[in-house]
Length: 203
Image (tube, rainbow, N blue to C red; front, side):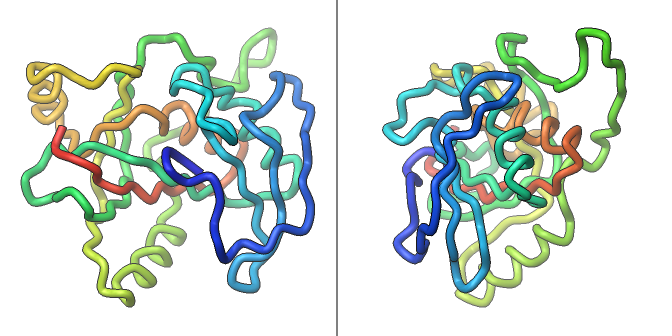
């Protein structure tokens, strides 16, 4: 769950877990229940009362907690700004690539401290999950853009015009504050990952 999404009316909660991880506490308890007949886990990325700025989110604890409870695929929900005229406020988007414009304030890997590994992030998102989400969204007649590039900035401030132009010139279509290192940690944890991005404005 991202900005504005702290629960779902159709979600039938069955249990809640306050998971302890080697990286500290996750943003909130992990709630497990049924959604459309499927067993799912829900975690409020910014906390249950939106108390964490993007750079304050314990991304490693969040991913670890979900993996430890048996989650196999993460579907993030994110509010984003658009860098393309044709990607309009109110549209949905499924980014498939990421540009990391964060500033090194976030713990970005599970590796280190004597454990060395290098994981490919050439294809950081799960194509099968994205295709499924796209089919459902289009079935409802919603405007959806696929295969976009998301630039992740540090925040919490929004960008200057110069920064927006720089990111667009680098190939970014969307800009947000939360998908990095989340997407890459999911990759390290061998979890599928996909973001449903809601365009809130033109950046």
